[in-house]
Image (cartoon, rainbow, N blue to C red; front, top):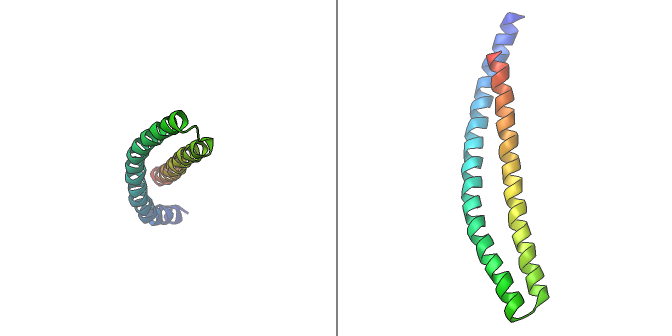
Length: 98
């Protein structure tokens, strides 16, 4: 029984390593996107204010607001995937260490 448990732990090491590399790539992508979303969010906010003030075109304001919401949803999805990968890696390393 001990040998099977040890073999299972050894077989989980490459899985943990692969999840580590994927998690690192996802973290870098999410951080880069967060910076870009911040810049685009600021530009969209300025465009919403300028469009509402100058043109009073509420359809364009709603469209720009929808684009801003989509930016947040994409960031939320990336952070969710990053969190799930981190939790999975932690569970695997806890099993390997125990």
